[in-house]
Image (cartoon, rainbow, N blue to C red):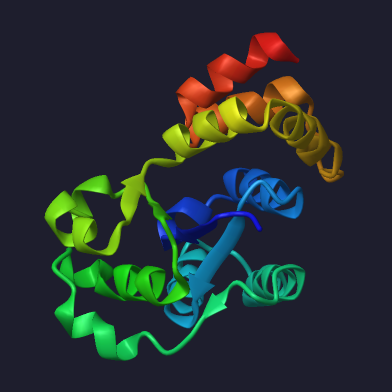
Length: 182
C-alpha cells in the first residue's frame, strides 16, 4: 500500500499543482489525505479568489469521489494539543489521526520539527515532494506531467506551458528538472 501523505490547503489550492498531485495519487505513488477542515478552507479561499462556488464544489466532489478513503475524521480532540502554528493545528492533528508520514505544505515554518518529531511526521515543501516522487517513480511522474496538460481543453495547454505554470506555482526546481526529461 502506498504511503499516506496529508495535504495542507495551500498545497492543493492551485489547480495545476493540485491536478499533478492528484494524478500521481491516481497512479498510486502515494495515498492522499485531507480533512473536512482542509476542504472548508480550500472552498473558502477559492471562492474568495473569484472562482464560482459551483466550480469549487465540483472540484471538491471530484476529489472526494476519486479518493474515498482520503478524508480523515475524528482528529478534533488532538487539535488543542498540537505545538505547531495555531492556524495549522487542525492539519497536524488530522495528519496524525490519518497515519501520515508527511505533511505537504508551502508553510514549512508553521510546522516546527519539535511539533512533528514526536509523531514521526515531516513537513515537506511541494517542490521537494515532487522531486522525491520523480526519484522514486520517474515513469509515473513523467507520465503524469504529460497527461495533465492534455486534459486541459479550454484553453488547451502544452506541456511547456504546464511546466511554466508549475514553475510560477512555487515548484520551480521540479519544473526545471522535469523539462529536459520530456
